[in-house]
Image 1 (tube, helix red, strand yellow):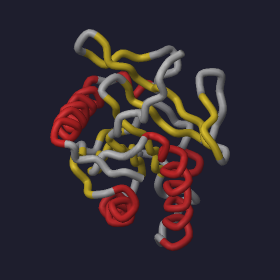
Image 2 (tube, one colour):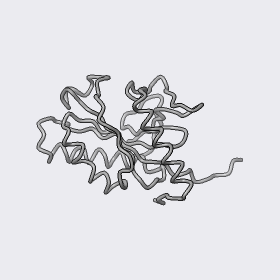
Image 3 (cartoon, helix red, strand yellow):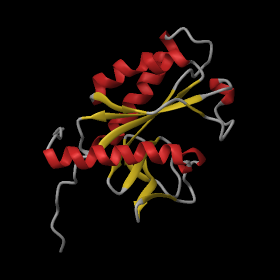
Image 4 (cartoon, rainbow, N blue to C red):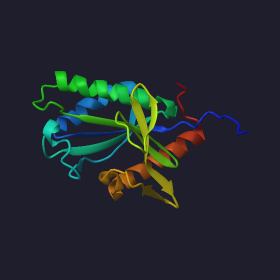
Length: 184
């Protein structure tokens, strides 16, 4: 019989995409209230791998990745997805944007060995968490590099994302070493 242990704390992240560049800055303060201080942010990347979101969000989407401190308990992933959905709805209602969905906020976390993203959609490769939220191991870290699965979204296969995620791994390692974790 295995001994049950509390999992190590993880680095909360979000992927934000929108065609409205001001939406990226406007969403950071509410995200920080929920998940901690922004510790790392990527540049804005063109999000051109699919036109799936064009009908509700418009064309010429950009994407940005953010990581937050302190580290958190991974059990919070479902809560993060529910909170991000509420923020998206609030921006759609009160943000004075013409699009029905002006911003998309996809939360997840980085651990030393994996990137896990939350989803409200079930598929064969996703595990149910709670309250209609599922988890997916989008990438895994092996032999010094990020590796994808057949289901990994095309943008997460790109080296620019991997560079950001490598920096996230460094933060996780450093924060665990100094014991900077949030118990929640």
